[in-house]
Length: 472
Image (cartoon, rainbow, N blue to C red; front, side, top):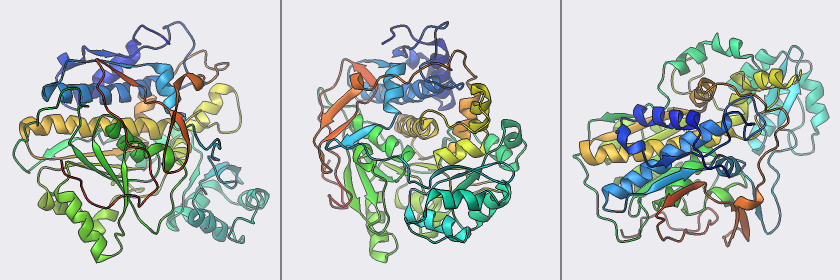
């Protein structure tokens, strides 16, 4: 591992720190070791992926150290190594020796009549919706070749719009300049990266002192309503720093297999928000929570009675942090999307292809938008907690994958990436017991000195715990 901090990563972390309104002097303990300025990048990409990941997680880890210090804990040095955070963002894990498949057989890139389309079919209802839209039989018996033949007859932008109108997840590949000219890109660019703001709410909440050796977020209650990678990553980071994270899933919705990895450190409960009883359960949890992290499409929670005004009434001191694909303004407001689709729609895949000399869109080597956004969510939560302790109020942050993509672009492009291999995972793996089986996963990349002593809860299947807070 490298020992010298990377100036670009430190600069990016400092910019995040300033955007969150935190004191610049607190940046001194942060170290972000990475490759030499004249050396090859950490990952095989023309984009500064390691810089983004290091900066986002470095800011989150430093915020945790600052909370610990404010609660009477020791001053800590914080380090996030470039290779270690790239390994964490690889999403690699195995359960009982089996490495789950990342993608459904129908997910991925297809040639359209006039361009390229990316289909996300990991959930059966999304897969079957696309198949019906193409006039093909729903179900897992339909093969990729049939989808390819059908999409080859469709115009990319037309099918993208038809899929969006049907509530499905499909993206047409655009060049960077084409995305920049799109009205949704303008709407995204108008929003801050974190969009962190204080609203009217409760009085300042002084910190409860930490017991000796305790992690910085001990005793803080985080209610998490997320399913796909970015939000669960944010919750996992907060759990790693000692927060009491309660992951709430619907008993009627499927999950991806990465829940075995992203649930490390959390309790996991079922609440059915389609029922009056379930909504009342959620209200009870929110009244006693410090933080609410969610990744519903804009307007979806408000339709269930959990809009901003509802949350302020329930808990005027809440920190409310949400992630969406494209945000709540512009022509794509509320449109469904995942990391891979935002990469395609926003021009990253065609730009990467051009950098590698390929005619076919090329995905980033890992889900960089998901992991960067997840780390940024964890940072926004803790920045809001730090400011709430002094200023009081109801705090809100709104992040999007599309705005995270534009932030990634702002970090510049790198050279010498063409022959780079991904970092080896083996030095970063740990073996854990879990409710899913024997879990081998990547250790959290942030390091604290001096460390605290804490044992993470094992990841457990949804519904393993009651939908209630334990005593503080």
